[in-house]
Image (cartoon, rainbow, N blue to C red; front, side):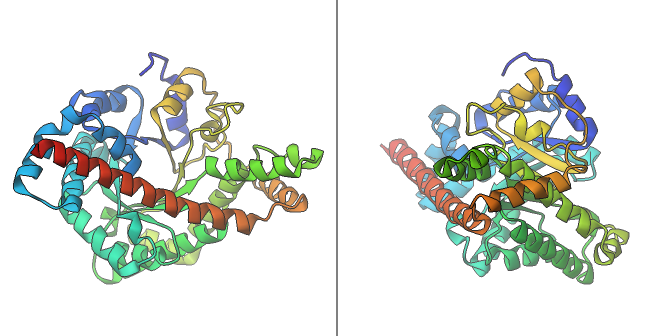
Amino acid sequence: MSTASAEPLAALSSVGVSIWLDDLSRERLSSGNLAKLIAERHVVGVTTNPTIFQKALLDGAAYASQTRDLALRGVDLEEAVRALTTFDVRWGCDTLREVAEATGGIDGRVSIEVDPRLARDADRTVAEARALWWLVDRPNLFIKIPATEPGLPAITRCLAEGISVNVTLIFSLDRYRAVLDAYVAGIEQARDAGHDLTKIASVASFFVSRVDAEIDARLEQLGTDEATALMGQAAIANARLAYEAYEEVLASDRWQALAAAGANVQRPLWASTGVKNPEYDDTRYVVELAAPDTVNTMPEATLDAVADHGVIRGDTVRETYEDARGVMSALAGVGVEYDAVVRKLEDEGVDKFEASWSELLDGVRTALADASS
């Protein structure tokens, strides 16, 4: 971690952006690094995924004792994965407990993902979410559920049972509106079931940099001056219009009735905020998406970049909707098919999640075999 000033991070927090770290490892926990980031870098939450866990597990020393015990007990592979990952997430929740208490459970959250192979099966997704909620057994947990079409009813059902959810893998505005509706429906059902709505939280993870990567490639292939002039504009415009949709839900009578009953808003979370194009400023998906009641989950390199040279200009979202619509209209005008882009990104996203899960399984399989030899 660099020694850059954290003043831009403080300024970002003052706008209303919750800074979350997109990483977790046992080394980061045991060394006190996460606690230091909380104390010095305004980090108030953590997100994880199978790739993050696989990278962490490469540090065999940190996991050797637990892996040896799992091997001696002869647990099956998937149980071993859950034991290893939930151990880290539980520890992360405990490290962030004071943040959770100070914010009424809005922040201080750690996210763990359901098995991505279940992304197109609502019933099994709900069953997996229940199991993870029980295994970690911490009130400041988020269960990550992909926003596939089958994922939408699973999200509603989990929320209705009082399970806090991080809805992940959102690319399209239409799908985001469906996520918002699934959230409101879940909170309505939780209210009707007698749950304490103040204890249920949610974020909706809208992916950013992957949108630019896909649309920029299409613009470059088109090759016209009009097309190339639009490069690097799609992702931020898309996210800004998502925030507009969020504001529209907040203004609705349906939501206001839930808010009066103590419900928490489902905050937009900007995910995939590390730039893919090295020619782009490495803080752009943070400083250009600063708005109240949002979350920005950053890999540590992006966190360091913002601390070092991020220029925080206050709210950079709420006065931009017309410009954002202009960008999306111009993209359609040069031949970029938005629906085809977001459909491809979702399909690829599920495939990537599944591939990462397979790599994690392979890594744990190897670790168990080594521990048994």
